[in-house]
Image (cartoon, rainbow, N blue to C red; front, side, top):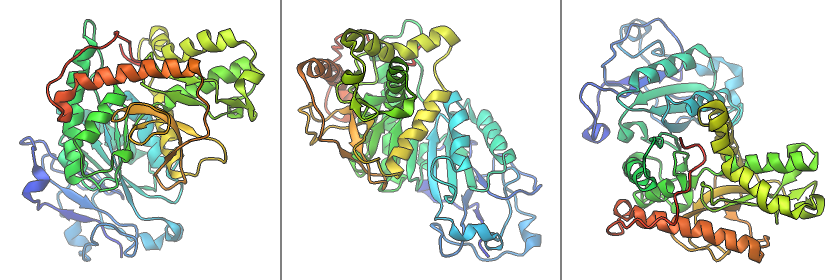
Length: 436
């Protein structure tokens, strides 16, 4: 019998920087009407089958004792997954940590993860959700909705406000939570405030996450936040950190498809170079439509160089003007696309965009920053940079502008990356897509 293990014991390292009275609540996968004590400190370990488990399998417990346990919500029970024939082909449980889990992006993303849409219909998952003290009650509501959705692949849900607890043993970390830019806030101020969040989260990942955790930073300014995070996680390969520029790639593909009068799946080799800001460079030089270079399909060079580029760069701001809030559903979809690009082989000849660490890049881009570049994957979670790209003078000039902006941002957060005193000389106040 494969059992859930429920323990009220914990070690000092598990409660590092915990706030009194605020627990990391665990949810186990099957339902029962057990009462709960909301401030009980719990740790849950679940297994799919004894030979597939990553955490220790608990010894069998008589059902009468199990029913008397105090745990959070209705997930507390023991169960035998082997009774379900279809679980025989399931893979080992993977743990996914999500910050900003009570926000709008997560509201779309979590259900995609739990449904099997991202990692596949045979991949059970555990969701470990990070929020703030203010959002803890909302996180409970998120967990309730996940309960009520009856996802068979969702074997565990935990909520908490301490990254040292929520990130424990996670194999994927989706860092969405960040402070939005408010009226009158300087770009440098936003870099500092959010940089502190990602410095702390980097330290937590370094301390408790899987040594091969894959990290996707969504919270803006995502490129520099990803740099701060990886600098504070020296025991995790820098290559494992990504800044989300997939939404920009998707937006660029949409614009090219509409202009060419084709469906978006005909657009390939679309690269977003640089920063997730208005200096980003949507690359029409290397992009293809039906396997043909875009410039041979769309003859209007002026449109490509001006209107197309600006539409992609400013799409997030236009959406805010139209709807009154930043993109959420499309951002969640792009996170899904970004993960899929790493866990499934890249189609032959194609590539995808991701903000990655520049050390060793073949394009002449300054090292030691996080810069969006064309990537390929074998489907093992890793990637390599595409080398069969063309860079002309027009493209190079625009790439250099985004590079200069990221180098300036790096100087502005030097105090958070362990590189000395910060010095902010941002070339201009470029509004980040999605900022208010």
